[in-house]
Image 1 (cartoon, chains in turn cyan, orange):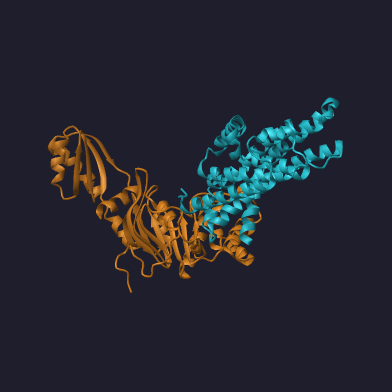
Image 2: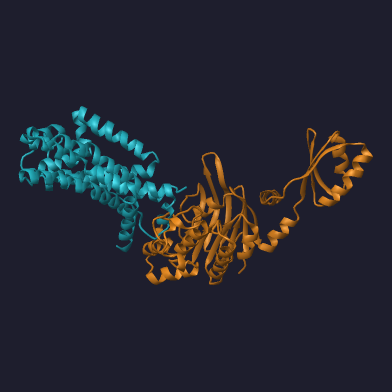
Length: 249
Length: 312
């Protein structure tokens, strides 16, 4: 437990240090800022729910969340490899699965630390303007689940290649934003839609726009949680195997 | 019981059996067999000789392409538990710049299951007490090396692998670290220290393995390595207007060991450089040959090692 906490603490310090926290923290507040601007216009305010479920939610799930996950997920092990500190943690009497798990947990918590305040701010804008608190819990659950799936995918990518950020950006903007929206059957393998399906499943009534985004994916928090956990477990297993067998040059 | 070969330690804790490592077409270590036991063993060789590759295989960061390595009877690639008994100071700057030296050593302690008192003890051993509260990012290379050594010592491992630990240290720090390594060896730990500087290895190790081009070039005590080096012939490049005739004359001389002719250039190997210098002018005059070059090659460590490899 002491080892896990030590790696976790050091990973969070590593990932959230310097300008990274400031830049990603500001980016995390972008959806809430856009929502506030939209609702300031009385004409938009009439369709407040629609406003909430269009631009701000799209910015959060299509851009802000995946980019934060990419930076933190790819950096969790990738930074250690780039900085030469990977040997420092590998030369310790620790199971490789603990290292992989602690790194994923660190990347995921770092993502939540910069994205959750923005998601809370979005819901607060709705609550202050319309006394509507129904989005807060579902939105946090959605961010947590998609964040876990994205962080996991980018963790292993960051360990495998030094071009993880470039490949990750192509994945986010070509695959997640483009292909899975254009081809309905691909929606089921979209990491973004894991969170959105949980969100839609937890809302009292899913907005039609949300159903359209989900495509072939059924709304439901249980299925989304299971999917995210399976992805995380598979990635921890794969990363463990890589840490055991891959040369550290 | 005495080990059969100078490459083998009396009571081995690290055993390297016919190990090779290649990266694509490049062979970094070739069919190397040796062992390390209690005390300080110097791993000597020029840059690029394969020392780091060998040490990284010993600690399990690299897998051998062929052969086997065991540390205290375990394969470090398969059992991370061996790191309770094995620690390494890597050559690269494996430090977290945002941590203070105390946090860095404390992190190593937390991962090794060591207590706070071990942290302070390790910091004291490397003499970093006064700077332990400062971020490592502001440290000199030598201070970072000492922090890395402290992090390796904190788990109290009986086997220590140190890859060029004196790089970047000033003479005072170097003397302190050398004394520390000697003390650790005297306590019965296996300490393997790599270096490309013979004088450094001479000061801390009783036993030396010399590696060149991925092969074991020489092994034994420091005195034996020194003796092997004093036998090395000097190489002199000569250019003359009639090289074949000069080569024929030189080959008959007692002080010349070999002559190689390439175009107008002669390369002469001799154990008596000054004697050759003195005799060349009369010889050339007698043959009516004119010189345009007489240039002894530098006796670099690399050339010394290459000689040792060739001599085996």
